[in-house]
Length: 112
Length: 135
Image (cartoon, rainbow over all chains, first blue to last red; front, side, top):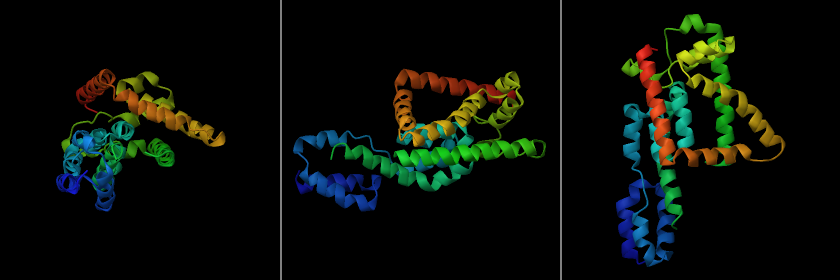
């Protein structure tokens, strides 16, 4: 893929990934075939800020934040335990953005 | 989710679960008016799993009907607390990963749309019942 397309993808999607992954993503995208360009845009990336808002306004206690990013197992655990007796809810306010970025990376990895 | 991470999470959470139940058994009358549930403390209404501790305590006494009436989710948690430690022990003794495979299969199964809708409706119904009971 030419560098213009890759840079465009990175510019629009940089906030979905960890900073230290961006270089790796750029390198792999350069090697990618042009035909993958459309399917690359179909990847269901979640906005970390949006998930954090869900987590803070009450979704955290019910595990909705974990369900949204695709951690269904942990979501069920969170739902069953009232958000880990309230402790896990608070911990996740700080962890959920990183977890979201990690999940986004896993989703993109399937195409790289 | 890697296998090691999952097993660590399960061991830590079941240990915390047992500690919480044991602590509640000894202090039930003292803390019955206080709840650790963030949702209930903020909004004032019960969350879907409020009453699970009381349900677990009734199960330890053998009053299964009362436990069911307080919150049926108590049985799910009781089953997890009883089975998972032995399951992990089995996996680590025989160097297998049956629990990890079951977890992955569970995640795939509950995201199938009809099953997900039924489960969500069940949780919502239980939640409505919780609020109605005023837990």
